[in-house]
Image (cartoon, rainbow, N blue to C red; front, side, top):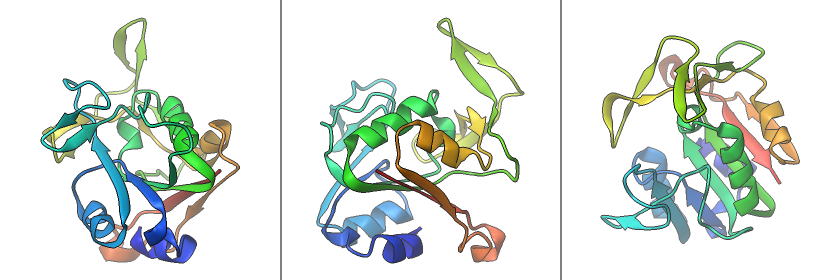
Length: 188
């Protein structure tokens, strides 16, 4: 992710950046390198826009940030856990300034289409496939529901959410003992 940021957004250190996490290697890197960094977590028992232990709570589906607040938004392994990812993508687009970029990772399967695993309908959660959970730094081991498995159509989903361009950067996909991921880049 850092390699892609350096090559695709060489001036990111001087940009207003929003990271969708308050922990992890990318957050620590951004904290050291970026002079204007905002960050948040999602706490289901804290109202969006308020703080817990110095960390702002945000619901990616309904951000409290004003329009055009940031030049760059980043995240790692978040959007597969967002109930309505299209609302979340549209919110990221809304808070980006013209010429801004959303640079992020999610697990991407070698399939054409995204597979929905769970959806909210009529106020309840419906499982379309057996429930799958990921570990979370805040919620713990096997506690974060996976709503979908992205396919290569993730770029079309981003375009449908209002981004001008969207592409996958696969240069690091085979890095780190085959644990690398494609990085998704979407621009306004």
